[in-house]
Length: 412
Image (cartoon, rainbow, N blue to C red; front, side, top):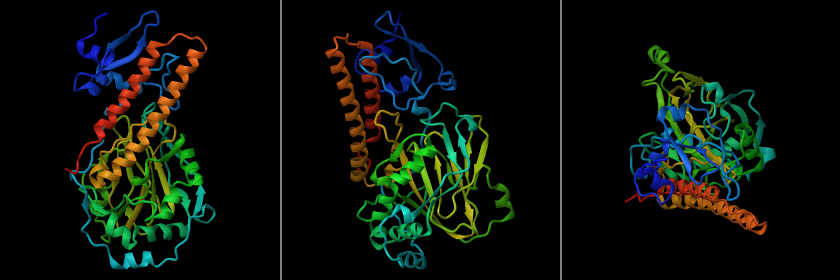
């Protein structure tokens, strides 16, 4: 069998070409000959590769004592993420209405108590990936839930009070080409209620049950990202007719998220609001409009793999939503997290510390388990599985390569 030099350097030695990750898109590394000590590579077209229905990986990864028999999941490169056009962290300059800030602060502080602050009622309907023509894509069968009850009125007041505190607005208010007013990147000292709420077992259990996979917040810096906007304007008939169509009706353009799942909570009264729905693009290119959350409710969506956009809202005054991204809890699960949409709205040191720490913890857990398997196999007199070890190493190499793509000195 002939293997091109480019392919050979990818599989039998260190990656010597700069387009390493992109070559992998065109390689279907699934046909293994057990009687020979090499893989058979099939060069197939980009479209053919991604039109196939491939099994997903949840808790499995190749071990040193068992050759991987599964086909690779579709490369994350297909699910392109586009970020803001601004390159650096930019503090927000648009002044918030004083009445909003003062009313939000006029609340007696409470410690988070799940019995008092959570009102979890599971959604009646969950749209599956198969329902939108994306079966086999992503890390779960869940696409998006309908809005479901998650918070009590007391909880909403506590979160608003923390978001609009003087310290938060002074240190964590940021803008981008996507949104003019956001509050994000705050720690548990600035917002203890929000952090305790999103790390509570009760909330994690509810979100994970909807997602169909055990999830945890992506990392501390991303907990409770808050979008703030105002619009008293009533829509014209032409604007009403355009809602749901591509064009000027979107508040956020078509995009995919940086993180596998998101939980979006509404902190505003939306009774007088028109619009604000989320539109998702299905596998065949058609679109589906889904309802956005109302005050105290939330929506869970696998936004990393679903192209979607938020429509403009009219009337109702304020529109304040809080978004927390989630990733798989298991260090062995597939994780296509990127930093594209958050890098330029984040302080570099804090973002990279959080990102690198969780990725290194995952990598350490994988190495520890692999070492245990190798030692156990040796103890029982088994043969060292060269192909299985190489497959595992290749998987970790891809994991590290993805970190190299995300970590660079963007502030300078």
